[in-house]
Length: 195
Image (cartoon, rainbow, N blue to C red; front, side, top):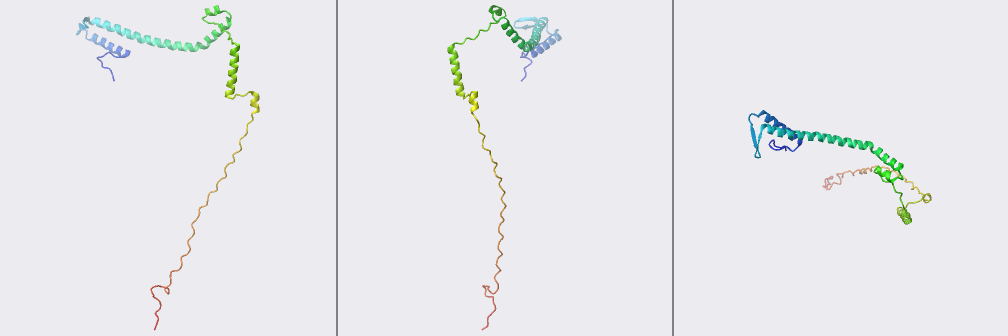
């Protein structure tokens, strides 16, 4: 959804275009607009143009400064990446060169490393904790590992192939008996008897 030309544009580029258009209109219609009253103050056309031009210059300057700032940020990131290893190496070299001189290290903004001091109680507690961790994780030593021997699983025999079944054919039907002869016909159609 766009903005109406009669309202102030939200972006800097849109404002620049709108003000440029107003300046062009004022220049074109200078004869028609001798003066305008805005918020109780009378402005001549020249005053209007001056005020608009000042705003346009501020917008343009901000846009160019933004581009310069973005370029400076990009250059800063690139330079940090390029000198990261160098800076870490320089710190290490200074810490080694002035290891015993706290005041000289302070001149570089560095603090000398203090040797770690471990009390006997802390050492005993650390040893007990390490043993408990090994026991909980079932961590074994070199000799204990050598005593463990693995057994190979039994070889897996492949299943015997199944022979396909031959289809069973239906038995052939027995031949049907001969049809009854005429002598055995129930209708009595045999040879006539004489009396």
